[in-house]
Length: 414
Image 1: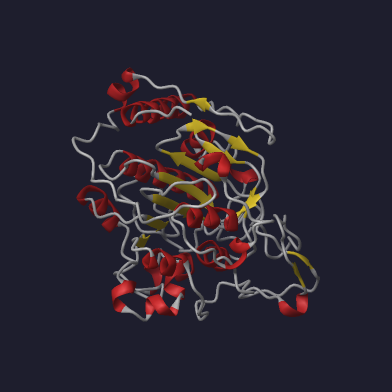
Image 2: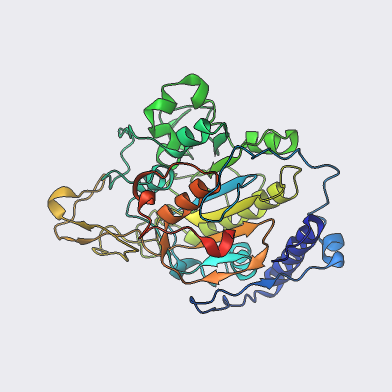
């Protein structure tokens, strides 16, 4: 299969930004093209030199970072090692909220031009168990966000290090690398990050080791690493709650890098929330969209965007209302949970049922395979984890060892 050359890829993404700018001006965003699940279709993205010149966003890097020698890596499932895999984990928004949402023009343009899994699911509610599932292969029977939890289990960071590969969990607004204190630091009214959105803080073999905990730095370090050729193979990006569509701080600080974002953001977990604190969820969506619009170009325009690098954008779980939504949409092999064994941090349900994480977008931007691919295969966070494990030839963790039920995302990576 032929692939685009690096410069052609930049031209292609530049065209995407031209379309994005035009869409912002017209308010006209098209719906996602539907493609039968049985035969995923691949069509090259349009590209154009004029778009590159007009946008002023991209410029071809004058050099590329040296590529890693992966001769010691024996990939599985027909995949090959990712030069870098960048994972953006957003919050609490499902396909029903995101697709065609005029407050998320950039996200919708990504969906329309790159890889999109239309039947991708979170594992459960609430947030933290989904992060743990994506990094260790199981939620380990957790269904709450308590930061007192400790997950004494092997995670992907352990397996990467065994292969001599690097990893980092960049966390926006974390006070300093490896910080595991209160989310209200430095003062109660200014917190904009949550521990439960930074999964590697919950594995004791990491947070109890200062050397390994240093791999959980503030997000600003990512830009430095991209241009100094120090970005690791595995990158997990945790935006703060002002920019991941979560909300939760009464007043998010002024966000100078996003001038169109109001200072006050919503405290909203979903569109059904009618709380007086749910001021304007549109602002929350816009902030998340603008966050991705800034950071994705930083990656693809850097010298670290080499070879078989990929960017993954997904959401931990779909939106729901804790007071009203007893059952939520389950994905593949969603567990049946009994009420006597189930509680949220602040709520308990009085009825048994399937508490799946709901249907959320999975967007794949591949440097070597920059095509618009839509698949309707049934996938969830375990499939994504397994794809990364297979790429680097890692041992399969937790449920990813189930070869019959948990498949690799071949549509995007082969």
